[in-house]
Amino acid sequence: MIAKILRAILPARLRPSGYLENLVRTHTDGRIRCGPFTGMRYNAGADGRVHLPKLLGIYERELNGCFEQACALNFPLVIDVGAAEGYYAVGMALRNPKARVIAFEAESKSRVALGEKARLNNVESRVEICGKCEPEDLKRALMGTQRPFLICDVEGYEAVLLNPAAVLPLRRAFILVELHEFIERGITEKIRERFVATHKIAQIWQQERTIADFPFKDFYMRWLPESYLHWAVSESRPERMSWFWMKPIHATA
Image 1 (cartoon, rainbow, N blue to C red):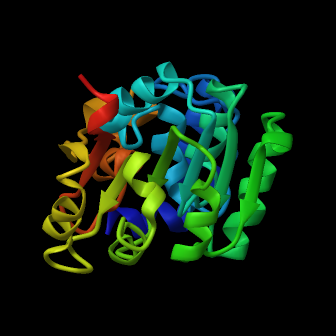
Image 2 (image 1 turned 180 degrees about the vertical axis):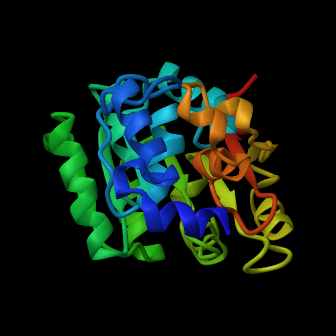
């Protein structure tokens, strides 16, 4: 009821959602506020509202340690499958100026947004943008590199792509994969079984976001229902998610 009243009487920029978006963009100047990609220029694009958690630096913050490790390892090749609008592909190109980045993304609208973000951050010459990734595409991308870093978020298609029997170079890759149990039950154990002999596997669980994660306060926000702050920091996941951070056994202590 309150939301309907506010929409009826307030201009878009003063409606709760628009106000929070403007507040975040003003305070961050359109740059990611904290985390492994601090300072990266980030405009709203194909990802829609999820750009707020990214600008705030809290998007998938459970993985910050993984990305700091990855940056310290100075991978010559970073492959991002399911790159969306380029948060990780562009971020890794910024953090690793000597790395080549290959970004696979099936959606044309997202590929356009990815290209825009690469240009916005002056890394377009090192980010190769490709379409949908099939096992043969992944095999070709991995060939010839002894220490590749693979980021994978493909809405359940990891069951097809992450098969070292079909894509042999996966055995030497460092892999960070989001697991989509809500799409295919049992996929977590399936992936674990495929890599347990060759990789050290750590499972990382999604953490809850709260209104305390929204760092900017002003007088107007005192009157906002808390649901809007939850909206601003939420990643809108269907259930609690997890990731595997998989490092080749021969490359770990």
